[in-house]
Image 1 (cartoon, helix red, strand yellow):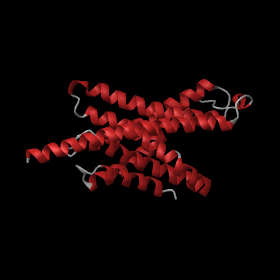
Image 2: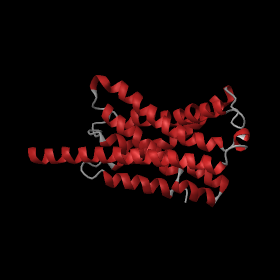
Image 3: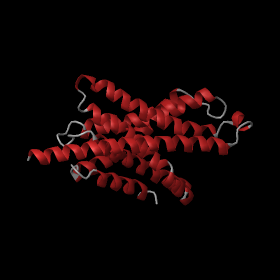
Length: 235
């Protein structure tokens, strides 16, 4: 139950890459690098939370900092490091869609290791909930990052801007999803807003990021198809 969602999503994107499929070895290595990125993010988060004490139960500003920086940015940056360090420089990364494919593989490695920890601690109910929400959310953030990283590979002098854009939007949507979840712990807010409404906020953020990721994937898959047909004509 903990492993299946990450594997299923990885396979889905593997088969979406139908015109210029990536070597399986690179995809497997990316998946395991994602697990390493989860460990790296966990260490960085512990350091940050120990240096800067956060009061999520009383202070909404602290919740914003926690969700968008200490979790959203740190986790997406950890995933980015693995994509940028391993897959990005490879000659097989030869079209924009590859940014999505490798980002998703790294993110699913991250989410799978994270999921194992949560399920071992909290049980089967958590496994079912995360199967339909948290793990797909990680995939949607990865697609958003990978969409821009795929463009960055071929952006020339605009590469740095595209990389910053990739990190910004992935961190933003990750942070916005977590922000509503973290707000459920706020004691003062609970007096005025039911936790159910806050959870709906997280779900709406998730749905919007999924919509963006589907649009991004469709665009890069179409571009991949056009490149494939162009090569076929030239051959």
